[in-house]
Length: 290
Image (tube, rainbow, N blue to C red; front, side):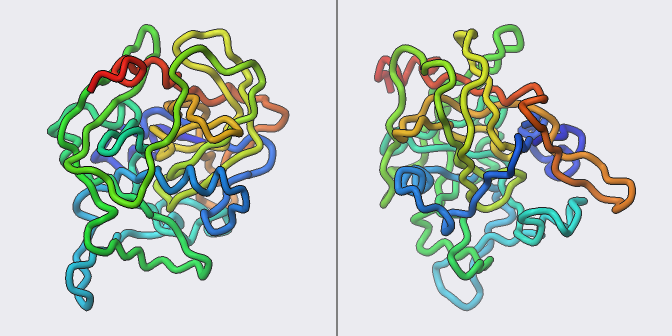
């Protein structure tokens, strides 16, 4: 789900949330420790949160370790009874590994190299089985910076939206994801998404399918996604990336009785759907030029 105005208020330092995304039917989002599907679990290990530099703090009692420090979703105008409301929210966008030091995200997430350097790409921003919210990032092995933007598109006419980023060094202990290099996914293909909805720790959401597949630049799907999912990889059931989540329906609506915001719900695919840039649009990946 995505409310552009609301999300911009949450994270005014970046324009990533201007591209909205919502819950279709049941809320299928799961924390990483809840995932039983091994394909989905392994896919999540190679996704990263785009986190502002200032929320990554050096641990005072553990030399050489770093933590993410931020406030919970409930402190940002979301009703306390909403799912994940007590978890911290820190990510502005999501990215995913496609090479030893290559990462893909949405084009509207990284406007230029200068803005990209205001953020870190953090792997492993997720909850463990205890629900622990002390996010320790040991020895910087999970924290990377932008080195170069290899290819980027943000085309208002075609709606193409992607970026291929080179990180400052090779990522350790994470495997690059498999991705489609030619053709298109079939109509009604079952899909799932991994990322950081509304900046939350890693969430996996399945139970979705491609709804509209007649545009060569992007397809539409009924994915449970939000601002913060921008740049998230969208997978088929085999764990192959089909595309990049870039925009969609409004995320939250204001509940006048509660005086706070609640998740927008779309029954029977009534809403517009979520737009997913086709991964094959990235020429440097398809042609292996980098």
